[in-house]
Image (cartoon, rainbow, N blue to C red; front, side, top):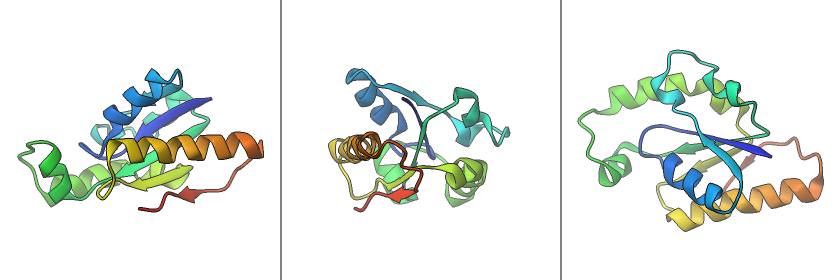
Length: 125
């Protein structure tokens, strides 16, 4: 199962992908938020698309960024196609790294149990 993780800068993509890869999963971070190619994420041919989200105050706590809401709005626009096709959406603001990874693992386990879960799921904070 190939997992693609997308989201704005400092939403937790790299951390999540590292954790998933350490568990032996085929996970990839796609920097869709920096690309004008709206369907760049599709090139990885994912089985699961995980969309992470974070607010600007939390992004600034995680990383020193010189930009504001305008840049975040541009990133979100670039992520729109991925958001529309996401299998799992996680607002990472209130969560630890471990909680984000656990939600993805729970989703994947549930999807594997169902065999053909084609629904969209939002992980609750």
